[in-house]
Amino acid sequence: MDADQFAADSSDAIASQTPRPLPPTLDSPRAWKMAVAAFFGCFTIFGVVYSFGAFFKPMATEFGASRAYTSAIFSVTAAIYNLLGLAAGQLSDRYGPRPVMAAGALAMGAGLCATASANRLWLGGAAYGLGVGVAAACWYVPALAVVGGWFVRRRTAALGVAVSGVGCGTLVIAPLAAALIQRCGWREAYVLMGVAATLLLLGCARLIEAPPSHEPTAAAPIRLTAAMGTRDFAMLYVSSVLSSVSIYIPLVYLPDFAQGHGVSRVAAAGLVGIIGAASVGGRLGLGAFAGRASTIGLYKATMLLLGLSYAFWIGAHGYAPLVVFALVMGAAYGGMIALSPAVIAEIFGVRGLGALLGALYTSSALSALAGPPLAGFVIDRTGSYLWVAALSGGCSVIGYLTLIPLRIRKTT
Image 1: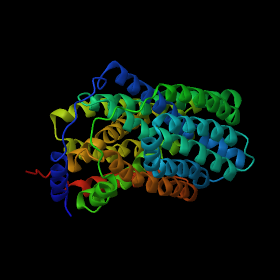
Image 2 (image 1 turned 60 degrees about the horizontal axis):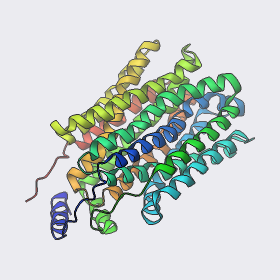
Image 3 (image 1 turned 90 degrees about the vertical axis):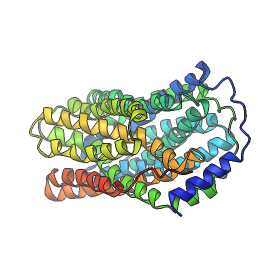
Image 4 (image 1 turned 135 degrees about the horizontal axis):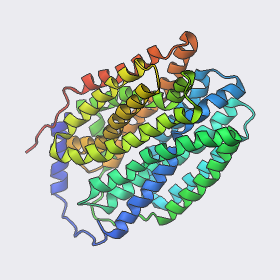
């Protein structure tokens, strides 16, 4: 099956439904409260996840572990939340988002505190991966589903606000984590972050409400199977696997690289914060600009820019080029994340969008499991980041080449 036939079948199914009047609560101040709660939930969850680079070196040093072994903690965490996102969304649909998100809040606190008390790296990694990974899964997809359900006219803007919490959390929490580690050690830093994150997430979960029903129920499992059988979905999936390698590697290794070139711990962790700040601009700016340009064309351009940004890392001989890399890479990465739901919607339609996104996000789990450990292995064996940076940039360029045939196929 190709996307033309798939979209045509979907259009026929939607046309056969009798539309329901839209509830007045949609696009209302009450709806914006959900977007704000989702923003702070994403801020907290991914601020913790993407601060791992600040903990990377002190944990590896204390346990005498290799880079490849230590980076596997982040890889397992990212794989867990990308794989479990679809299941978390289904639980949220069945039982409501609030209990799922509250469970994620408790998992976050328990995971970080257990990591802080581990006397073996593998125990700390298991606690961190399960706790933080489950927490992120319980928040990200359900939060996007909630915000998407509360909006119609301003849906794109509201989703942009919600996902910008990821970048803002990275900007704030990564350097804050480095400062805490410098002041009281990595174990105490994780305990403090665990307590604070749990309280913040529980507060956000308390504000979240399931959206009012305003669309007919769709046969999502059948739709998902049909979509995954198309060439377009295959191209998107393969390109996502490749580009995700380019996203995860600097989040783990860029602070370590910078410290090895004489940059202070806090300034090195600040590079991850800069990536987060630039990604906010990419998410909001490119997401808004997509309404006046080809969404798929912009998506391809951001993937190519992501790959080319690694030229700044490869040629870096000081802090300034690394800042430029973080800015360009972050803007490209943020734009890709903001545009991917719109690309899926343009090709396959909006019915069953959450299930399709959940399926696409499993591609990031593969990248997370393979990318950072492979990079650590190369660095441990060669003592150089050159090949890792070249590999990372090359993956996104190949991902861009994979997407060249992708385009909207108009249906009648």
